[in-house]
Length: 333
Image 1 (cartoon, rainbow, N blue to C red):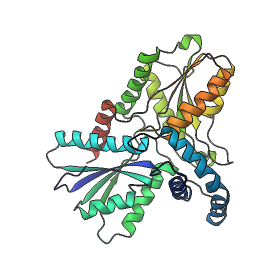
Image 2 (image 1 turned 120 degrees about the horizontal axis):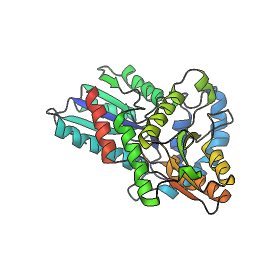
Image 3 (image 1 turned 135 degrees about the vertical axis):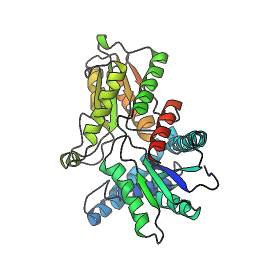
Image 4 (image 1 turned 30 degrees about the vertical axis):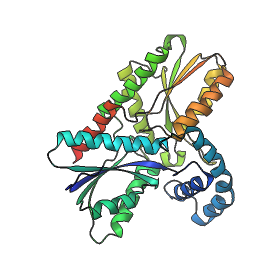
């Protein structure tokens, strides 16, 4: 959203998405994503051979099928919801501030690209940019990668912009409140889980390699902070509401317990209902709409055919979340 005369801009950055759910575009997207050393730290020459010879030829077609299963009429869900967040923040800032602020959405991988967006802002006369990675919890493969990309833009610029960055917001009150309201919306439709009878709620965060955790990445601890705050808000215990991790990639150990293993285990133990929320995702995407709502749901129901699997919608364009995101932005401007 462009506001004429703006000298300050906000760039909301999400992970990324292919332009279309076709093998060609998915391959292009995956190549950019999986050649980022913050994502895969293997020696580049070795990894490039593995990527081009084995990963992309098979994964691109399978991933394209998955993207097709969740694609919206307007496009990729992640792109649609991220743009809605940018428009929502821009509208709220326009109501609150005297000076105009331009708000743009960008993707770390794919389009609109971070560097292209920053070029566009600079050419529009923007002097200052607040960069807001839409990852509530900091981690090397996510927030650090965004910082890297912004730094690369600065390194090649003759006239550098003035940058500011939001590092994380894992216990931001409005963020926790929006997560709680999403849970209550799900419970209004399906009834509140009977935790006393053994129903469970899982908070499924994207996983990271154990090696990063051991090296000092604060991601796990920030996920735990989010979970503790949300449990308190909803009046749940740690037994009622457990942390799990999803989306493992590659042979190395990742944070555990894995969401897919947990839903299978709970189903086999006779747990009659599982609710799954994904607090680490600010917008619904392949990992929530396909991995959780299709793959994990199918795994649970295969073990517990009479069970109920309820996925909580991500924050997306929830007004309380947009208010909270605007508060966060305004506090940093």
